[in-house]
Image (tube, rainbow, N blue to C red; front, side, top):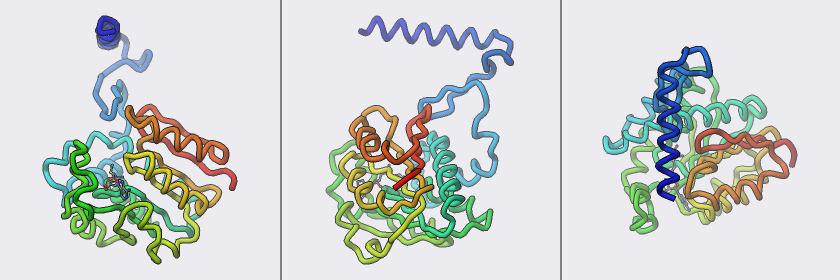
Length: 258
Ligand SMILES: C[S@@+](CC[C@H](N)C(=O)[O-])C[C@H]1O[C@@H](n2cnc3c(N)ncnc32)[C@H](O)[C@@H]1O
C-alpha cells in the first residue's frame, strides 16, 4: 500500500514538473499554485473576483482570533456559498435564508457584505450553539474551537450592520424556540455542522420549508471523514433536487420540486 502511495505521489510530481515546461496555453499548464482546500491549480480562479476576495478577507479577520486566520484556505467554499445564496435570492427574493452551523459566520458574513453592496436586503437566520455548551465539543480535537464562549459576542459585533436573527442552542432542541417555529418558508439552507446526525435533524426540520428554486449548501459533502453526512444529503435530497458536486468539499442542491 505504501509503495502504491509513494509511486502515485511520484507520478503526480512528475506531471506537475511536465507542466512547468509545457506551453502555458495547452492543457491549462502554467503557473502552479496551491489554491487551498485540496485544489492545486494552474489557472487563476477566484483571485479574479476582487470584490469577493475583499469581503472574504474582511470576514476571515474581523473580530476573529489570530490563531484562526489559517482557515483562509476555504475561499473557494465562500465563493460557492455566495453563488448558491445569489441563485436562491434570484428564485425567491422575498424569502429569508437559514444557516445551521455558523461558528463565526465566515461564509454568511462574506455573502451579506456582498449583498449589501448590491442593495440586496435579505434576512439571515443564524443558528448555532455559539459556544453555549462548553462540554459538547470537549476532547473532539479541532472541534474544541467551537466551545469558546466569546464566539457569540464576536458574532454579534460582526453582524451588527446586517439583517440577521441569531438563535443560540443545540440542534434539534433549538428548533422549538418560537423565533424559529415562526419561520414558515425559506429560500436557502446552509448545513455546516460537521456531523451527520445534526445535519439530518436540520434537513428534517428545514428542507420541507425550502421553496422550489431554493438551494441547500452542504459544506461537508465531499470531505474525507464525512461519508455519513454525504449519505444523509444524498438520501434526503436526491429525489427532489439537482445536485452540483464540486472538486472540493461543498455541494449545492437546487430544489426542483416539493
Ligand atoms: C464548521 S463550523 C461552521 C462554520 C460556518 N459555516 C462558517 O461559515 O464559518 C460548525 C459549527 O456547527 C456547530 N454545531 C455542530 N453541531 C451542532 C448542534 N447539534 N447544534 C448547534 N450547533 C452545532 C458548532 O458549534 C460550530 O460552530
